[in-house]
Image 1: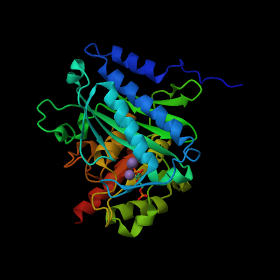
Image 2 (image 1 turned 90 degrees about the vertical axis):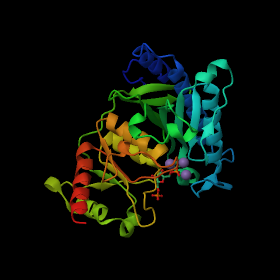
Image 3 (image 1 turned 90 degrees about the horizontal axis):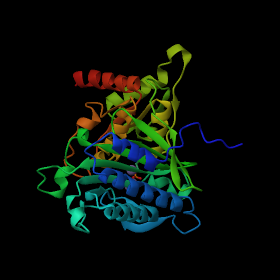
Image 4 (image 1 turned 180 degrees about the horizontal axis):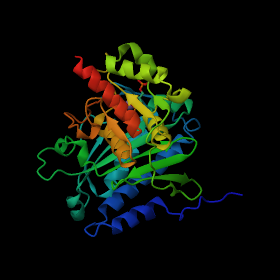
Length: 343
Ligand code: AHG
Ligand code: MN
Ligand code: MN
Ligand code: MN
């Protein structure tokens, strides 16, 4: 007999409105923005679910600003998020992995002139996994427009500590949307496709202090720096009380981070001799995931510094990242400390 988990049966829409009540100065704009985000997530989920049936697999035939071949789903999902966020009337600027420049939103009406939010997003994360039906997702981060902004980029080229909302939607065996508005509060919602509603299923997610899983592309081993090599070697050889570490990596950051956030351990995309700043994009992959992880009690470092202390130099800037359980990340920091002292 199916039983709705004994939560209070809160939908994401209701959750966001409840959150709004705590902020007397709230205008409701953020609630509208988040509502437009969740509509786009539901729309993308409905396409991912049947991509193989409706000709949405394979290449678009174009190359994005990252130099990556775009998948059909990258392009369609990107259009859907841009349209949905534009229609919210609350977004002034957007940065998307798939767009070279900042997307400037023309106000539709008088009241849209006060749009004060800036959204950075990765419409489909894990694109290389689309054609094989493996989990992909969407990652987003929300910033307030910078008061003295002179250029559209100014509101994005700020320290990650300015992020006010972060979340991802993972399109997998179930559709999970995980979001934080700060306050050390991270909540997970599962889409009930027959209702078309995200239902609160994972209230107050806390990342375990320590985990026995590490998630990294070991194919790059020979290209890593010495600190990363030493750390991964340590995980393989270090057997506390005979326990060994398990390696889990599917190549979609959303899925690898979701597992790490929920079960503990560490996810990493370090620098290597080909990706000298790392591969993951600071604004719409590393910042949102770092904020989520810290709000769930975990940590996120580049090895040398806290990810959220970075100030991106450009909207598609990249950075190395190690994130997950507090203790696991602190061990990484110790390795980088030792190796930086030996330089
Ligand atoms: P995207 O599909 O948005 O370009 O991101 C892909 C990223 C991220 O999802 C994943 O962690 C990483 O690329 C995997 O890279 P490798 O295939 O080099 O391991
Ligand atoms: Mn990509
Ligand atoms: Mn991505
Ligand atoms: Mn992407």
